[in-house]
Image (cartoon, each protein chain N blue to C red):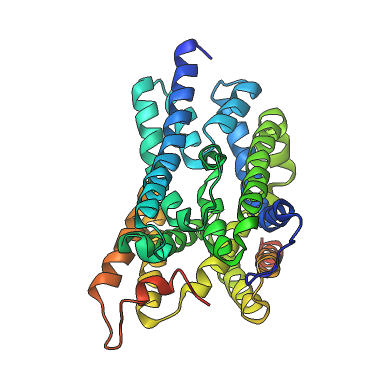
Length: 248
Length: 112
């Protein structure tokens, strides 16, 4: 699973699936938690699975079942769910230059989660155009199915799983920060980018610790962008914008 | 679930899909208008800036342990260092993640 160019020329979807495996360490424990919480909030196992299948957006699903259980008006539940997912607006345009023409893309956008975006943003530019659709389909499908399967498991046997393997539920989610770190590390290409990324990471962590998890990602990214625009070193050039994109 | 609740689920699902899809259609039309130009050059600068920064922000958010405490923060620090060290030598995707999770797990098991 090289970050540079390793891929199967014949089965790109299989390469995509294998490269999405690290996501499962983060997806499955969280999906189990969601299944458990949804059933505790009064939803049946099938309803929890339907929510994971259709909405497929981690944090907003927790908010959805929480607000419904608390008796909030449904229009407000929908509005808040969409508000949390609004950060996804910038994901697809960032991938667009590397997406070959296909009628499947509109449907495949259902699988464009935070994690799949981060993975695809790093890998698609390195793949030949003919392999990108298959790679993305494999990666997104595995992530989606693991989220649905984890929800079903949590809804049916979540309480027992959490009681028996509590420590595993704490250890496996570290796969997500580890994966994001591997994806962001090659983007420290200059002092300017390093400063902007460092500020973004620190502010996202701080906002999360302050309990502002739902707005931490867009706010921290805006902080980093402002830092990038305002702080300029002597040798900075316009090409620095794309150094975070093309880091060969 | 009541009919109203099903409608809320479907509205949330459709809205989320549109949030992910409509910007793609906008960018594809923009790229098509630019013709044979370099795709990256055709992208707005703020967008090329936000992509990597969003990944950085996701990393920052995900750093908070499931159960924050001295042990889990120590495990996070060692897990990050292990991930970085293996990435530095291997420049791969899978091994650094495995090493980071293993290091995090060892600290959690030893100190919990």
